[in-house]
Length: 400
Image 1 (tube, rainbow, N blue to C red):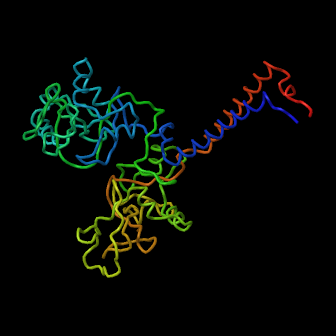
Image 2 (image 1 turned 180 degrees about the vertical axis):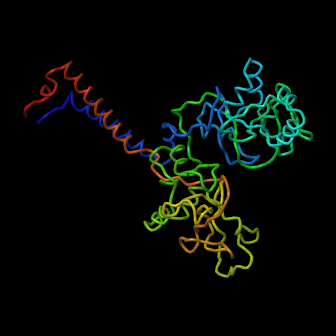
């Protein structure tokens, strides 16, 4: 009989650590926590510590959290004071404007057209307009003194480019270099925001919600935008836009649509959310015996997907999945449905919103790396033991 005095402890330790790590990695990949470890999202454009991102939030949305979500923990929403500090520290506003691709405000164009018509030389010397190719938007959301909104008005702060001329009626809360840049406020959903901080390209954005291989992301694309490319940018190369067939396959394999809806924080479609019964007018409600299940912290009532790999129906209507809780509203064009209209495949027009990505948050190549790593650890451990005690394998052998 063998007494494995020197072999059993290091071997059990290595294998125990190895399998514990694999188990932990699997659990983290299912919960989405491991996505913090891998590179994904990048800003649309950057200048020094300022980074432009697209978003789909209204005035009540947390843009600080959105910056952290898209670019990592070292980044927050840019504040007007950050821009002021940059300028007062000797920074060039012309370079700032070009760096973040900011066009002139739309409300300024009529003034400059009039000035140029009446006095081209004066306009050139006063406005000093420079073209900014490949611009994004004429206002970028920021904060002021850490506040996202102006007083109690519900108007979000933004920075805009006025090139030294303030339009009549424009409420500016502050300005730089005689209104070359202005701090304004207004209402509206979606658009662009400036984040600020130390962006690490190896930091990963995290999906807004995840359920198995389905992951929810925000976007600012229209019907012709590349949602497959965005999924890869946000979550990695092994991701794509979720297809209706993926959801159908999940359901046919025994998956629960209630779990799917709750996991992806899907709200009821607005057209069935009346206060009395949560149901639409002119619908036979005699078969309804209970209210639909509430989803805590629901995000939106439709998520962009594809159908048979196509992003659009006909020419300009994007596909989406919506939650109808077994009741199809009058006039709603459905292309397919699951479980008697619990989920419905629809199509419509519009820019921005949310989309479902599909794929594994951790690629199997990570498991390969772990296998190789712990294989090396095991080999090194056994080699060191052998060097320190060349006869370790047989010393514990005794005969009874």
